[in-house]
Length: 152
Image (cartoon, rainbow, N blue to C red):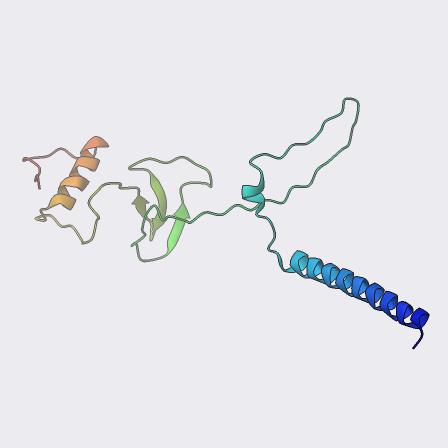
């Protein structure tokens, strides 16, 4: 083999090696770019900045947002029957003693307290739940105690 031929083979092998390294580097960059997880927009920046230029009208910006929360029940409905009417509208503010709706023409009111109402209460019933209900009714002007309320 002649010296010129051998030098040509060495040069072509070096060029092929450089091209192979460049193709490998480009493929590795592409794989890392595709496989890398997307940056979390909530931790990327605490603010979104938008430039405003005086005199421009009709500009807009689209922002993708996500709102997430866990619903927490504020009450429990144990009334059985048919809801015959609704006394409040969406967005109304209500407080203890307010009528929310009627079930079989009987009002369902808000009764809030630390002791859960877990049983049916009758005339001779006693307990912390009874005292809580008596106190609520007294606060609303619907009950006057004939004797001292039970203190648990």
